[in-house]
Amino acid sequence: MCARTIPLLRRTGLALLVATVSGSSLALAAGPAVAAPGAVSVSNGDIGAPCAPLTFCRFDPAGAPGVEVVDTPGAQSGDGYLRLSTPTAADRAAVAMLGDGKLTLGELAADPLAYRTFVETPASSPTTAVPSFTIGILSRKVPYPDGTPQFTGLVWEPVYTGATITPRTWQSWSPSGAASGWWATRDVTSTGTVNRFGFATYTASLQDVVAGVGADAVVTNIGVNQGRGPAGLVAGVDLLTFGGRTYDFENPVTAKAITATAGNAQSAAAGAAFPTRLAATVTGGITRTRPVPNTPWCSR
Ligand SMILES: [Ca+2]
Image (cartoon, protein in one colour):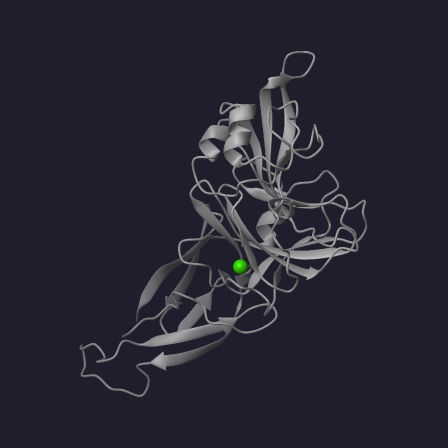
């Protein structure tokens, strides 16, 4: 008889899933798909949970119906990605991690910001639209009339760097390393003109933004946004990076088949271990089968 409890990868850095092997029976909880090494998996269930500090959620008062972590062979990392859909110009699709009220813009900008996009169906207009990298802040530099810090979204879009958007191709972006591309939602001035928050619309780098807004601005949310505006755009996002972590959008796997991959059809003396450790591959998934890391094993 043998019994083991084996930790699998964590989801959103909070929950720990386990698979338990007991004797000849093997029971598997749903586990995550293959995530990029060192990345934190974020599933459709994660972003569907109520918004809370330091977790991802659909960041939109209307619930952002065009937001889903999908399993698809088109994924570049793992087996899935975050799909954002805006059928009409009035739609918005966004996912963000809420801040904890402590993180400042200066602290956030100290680590690389990065993400990848994949345009499945370009917008009717503008055809160059892709999901943006968005940071919400509260700025003391531009307070409301009552003196409280004013909110604005800080938005980075590849098109304002002069980059070419290629549909049906994964493209990697670096909002923190780009020489331009940032603008503020609460004061969209003409290109190259300094806004109320102190940086030039569309031509500012992240360093320009921090210098203009102030490193002490409190971060309220970090994520990606699509719309309002680009009607018909269907786009993927994956490997969202900030705060020293990369978030890989992947759904859990439910085991459908277990196949011995090592140690089968061998014998061992009583009380001795098998010469080859017993191992198995578990496949599952929502739309197709796939191997699962850290497949449980036992020997007896
Ligand atoms: Ca992925």
